[in-house]
Length: 390
Ligand SMILES: Cc1cc2nc3c(=O)[nH]c(=O)nc-3n(C[C@H](O)[C@H](O)[C@H](O)COP(=O)(O)OP(=O)(O)OC[C@H]3O[C@@H](n4cnc5c(N)ncnc54)[C@H](O)[C@@H]3O)c2cc1C
Image (cartoon, rainbow, N blue to C red):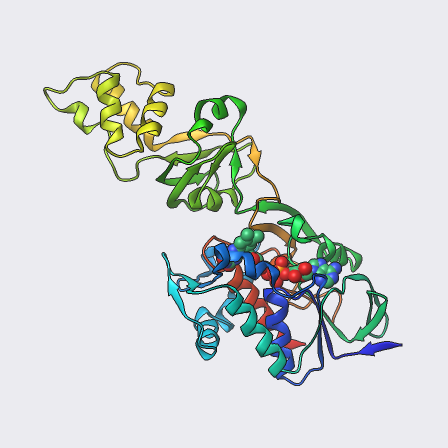
C-alpha cells in the first residue's frame, strides 16, 4: 500500500525544508524524506557550527552558473531580509561577522530548530532514515524508500551536492535528473583548498599556518577576491583561495597579489638605501608575515638592484602566478559547482521543462554561491519558489 501526498521532497536539508514549509503553509500535504538520522545535518556543521545563514549584500553576481541570469528571479522573490524576518520571529540572536555575513550568536542548532518548528506548524511530515532508492513516473511519481512506497503528483529533488561524502553525499539527485533525460553539467568541487605541485610544496608548505591578506584572481572573466590566504600542508586555502577555486579550472594559473595596495620596494628606492637581499627582506617583512617574506624572496630574488629590477620585483609580488596541481576534492569542498542544467528548469518555479511535476532546488542545481552565506540564500530562495509552485 502506498502513502499518498500532494508533494514529496527528497532531502531534508536547507532547500528541501524551506520548500516543504512553504508548500505546507499552502495546505499541500507535504512529506520530506531524509536518508540521515536527522534533518539539517549540513546546516549544523556550517559556518564552524554557527551557520552563516545569509549575506546582506546578496546579488546575482555572487553566484556562478552557466546561465548568470537564472538565479535572479528566485533571489529577488526571497531575499536575505525575508530570511532575517524568519530568524527574528524565532528570536534567534545573530551578528554580522564581516562583509555582510550573518551568523548565529549561539549555534547552528537554532536554525535547524526553527525549520523544524516551521515544518511542524505547516503540517509537514518528515521521515528520517528513509533513503529513496527508486523513483518511477506513471500518472504520479511513485517512490520506494526503506521498504515503503510513497506517491505524489509533485516531486522536489533537494538532495544536495557531492561535497563531504563522509556525511552521506551521493549523486542521487544527478542520477535522477539523468533518468528523466534532464541534462547535468559535469560536477566539480568548489570552495575548496588548492594543492600545489611538488616543487612549490617543497618551497612553501612547511610554512603551513601562515596567513596574509591577498587579492586572488584567475584567467577568464572571474572576479578577484581580496581576503585572507592560508598556507596549508599541501597547498593554499583561506577565504581568498576558496573563492577563486570555484572559478579555477586546470591547467589555468591563479594570480596572487601578496601585498594589495602596498609598495614593498619603496624603502629600497630611497636615495641612501642599501640595496641587497637583507634590506629587501626587511622591507617585505613590514607588510608580509616574516617567514613568508623571507621565503618568497629566497625563491623569487630580484634580477639585480637597478631601479628597473626593483620595479620588476614590485610587479612580481603583486602578480605571483601559480599553477595549482589540483584541489583537495569533495572531501574538503564546501560545495559542488555545476549540476542540473538550468536550461532544463523554469527560473520562476524550478520545475523541469521536460518532466512536469519534477522540481530541482538547492545545491543540486547549477547555481553555486560565493563564500559568505550565499549558498544558503540560494537554498532558501530556490526552495521558497518551488514551495509556492508545487
Ligand atoms: C563544512 C561546510 C560548511 C558550510 N558552511 C556554509 C555556510 O556557513 N553558509 C552557506 O551559505 N553555505 C555553507 N555551506 C554550503 C551549504 O551547506 C550548502 O550549499 C547547502 O546545505 C545546500 O543545501 P541543500 O538543501 O541543497 O543540500 P543539503 O543541505 O546537502 O541537503 C541535502 C539532503 O538530502 C539528503 N539526501 C541525499 N540523498 C538522499 C536520498 N537518496 N534520499 C533521501 N535523502 C537524501 C542528505 O542527507 C541531505 O540531508 C557549507 C558546506 C559545508 C560542507
